[in-house]
View 1: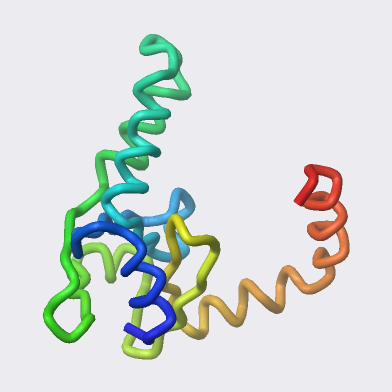
View 2 (view 1 turned 90 degrees about the vertical axis):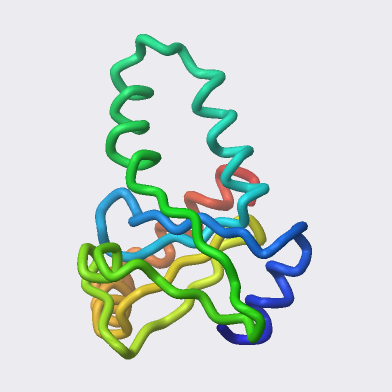
Length: 132
């Protein structure tokens, strides 16, 4: 794992992480355990009988796996998750925030980037409208 990601993870206590396929199965999300617990708590605060809440639990939270950084800052990704999102040997780490990052197959990320270039201004405008 690149040093900048290890340094960001060092902000959290412990080396426990949660890896989960992104909801559209395009990549893997890596969450520090502390942030995963916050996300889980937000789901638990939602109405229990909401179909969206139940579906989120079934389609997202149920696929999560706990992993750890080893002594030299590497993570071992479960093979079934790698296969599920199509990760090959050449991957890209995409830092989205301090709370989590994504691991993409390089070719898949380049396709995503190319396909979304025309929308960049629209995306930036949308974020600006949300105060970001």
